[in-house]
Image (cartoon, rainbow, N blue to C red; front, side, top):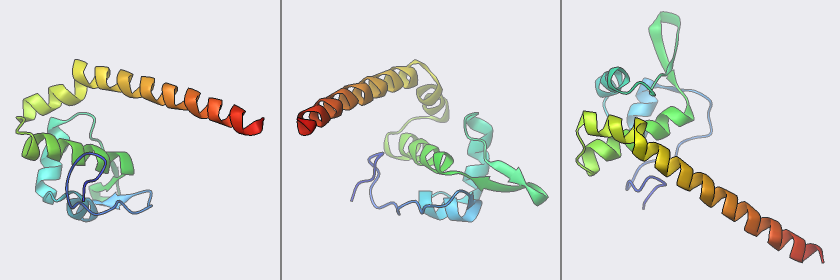
Length: 118
């Protein structure tokens, strides 16, 4: 089974607002110390810290960690290469393409809605 990022056999992310580091570790297949290290290496990965410096990750953090894991473990990127991929020109290009696809799908859905209303 493949998830949205192309990774196989990863559990579904529950509908929760916050996740502990242990939960994220299980959801992403990465040990907690690796998650703490990645926080230092990837500036976009910033979990909320509360009492006693406990980390609470949100859904977007879990998705980002899965993407980082895929880049490092599945696609063979180095930390530097993965950082550049996520934060560099490639990420902006992919975001622009995604936005264009969303706009196109929206236009097509609006056309279908107009046809259905007739």
